[in-house]
Image 1 (spheres, helix red, strand yellow):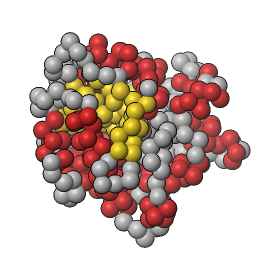
Image 2 (image 1 turned 90 degrees about the horizontal axis):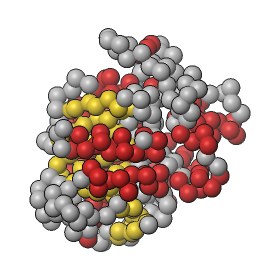
Image 3 (image 1 turned 90 degrees about the vertical axis):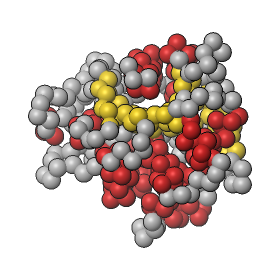
Image 4 (image 1 turned 135 degrees about the vertical axis):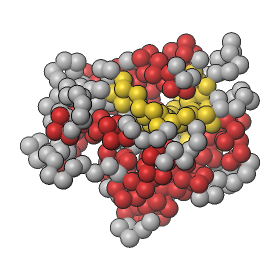
Length: 334
């Protein structure tokens, strides 16, 4: 079931799914999960019936433009498309809207009053938006009492398979980095589809130390297990994805601002400015674009990097119980 939260004072609403309260627990943790590119909250549906077994409540928020959440305005799109515009300011404003939505949901969902019982999880491109929430706090955009409410409840920040693009991490000079959306061996009309298959495939990386970029599998994926979406039919795509190529193109521009995104990464992931439990989760068989950031950030102060053995970029679908075990381990320090 999809629900709606509307921000007071702004003509913006977010749709979301909710696994529901855990009546037999007074100290459960609510995880607000922000999805990535193309796939929206519906792809997390397999988490819903299992969440309470891990003392977790999973609330998956559809970002703007996805599955009923308010579209970006023309002014916002123009600002994002303008090469001279301040992308950090644009992201910071989106972070404010998400912060206000989370603050309202804390009240509307009647979450337990114990402090530190909320976790924010950004998945893939959703990690960029999670970082933008912290930036909106840091810049003083989030008003009271919303700021105080979130700070009281927030205990953990999770970043699930953030990509090099989502964090603005450059690849080594001269590296032979495979970019699925730029692969001209596929016809232009099928390139995005093939990139989607590649992104949810399983890969065999050499993770022996020392970590070196050349040890990452690039284009070639494993034959088994098959990609998450190998058996999807059109009805599955319609239910789980946004097919808006316009939205895809606009969000791609966020990913093409590495300098701006790197500022957020350095401030909130590398510097531990958050002051709360911070964990990066990555699938050992996810694409190189997700494994490489984990290698780069593994030694950063205050950041716990957790390897999810055998997982690809869509563990929430292929192994939902396994994913929840990892989330539980992060938020409860197991």
